[in-house]
Image (cartoon, rainbow, N blue to C red; front, top):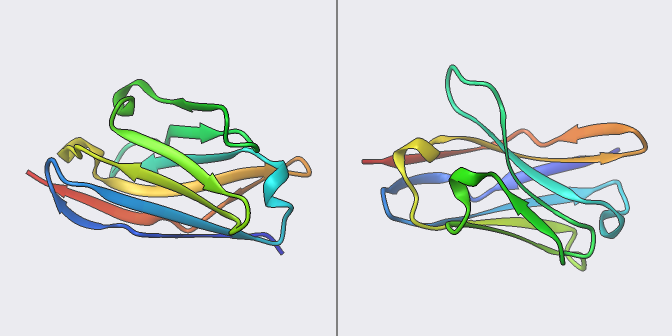
Length: 116
């Protein structure tokens, strides 16, 4: 079955960096776009970034543009989110998501906490 497993979260000081990973299995990874979302306590889940199947096209929500970079390694079935210049408002559970065969698949999430 399809599995998405995130890793790389943790506690970091404001201004610091983290790199999140999402390893996928059970699907043809190289054919599908991949997304990162986040959900802060008491808030709705929000879109963060997306990357095309080829990796050539990316898109970010305004609040992370210039600070976050999404990338992928199709040979490793993994998508990454490099997060720089982190702010306390970036604190959230970060989840990767994809869509295959008309079904949305989500990982379990990884916690990112940015201390001020």
